[in-house]
Length: 81
Ligand SMILES: [Zn+2]
Image (tube, rainbow, N blue to C red):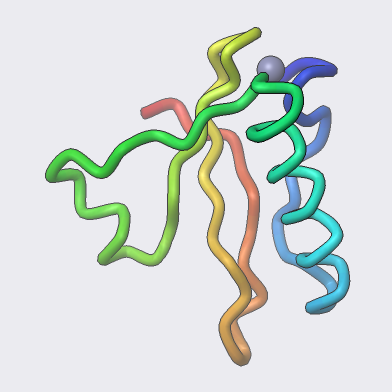
């Protein structure tokens, strides 16, 4: 965790609007700041389990993002894998 990625984990997105605000921030970090990069799927099964991995290029922290889907509120959490 660092200022270039995110300082807090989100255990659950309170609303779709919160998720969309977060997604915009994440997209900016990837496209403009280039501080975060999306990790490729390499036979890991992340996609099947419903999440995507991101890596901070500054502090090397791995993050797991699950988008909200109906009653599933989604999350954005640190990952050690
Ligand atoms: Zn970072």
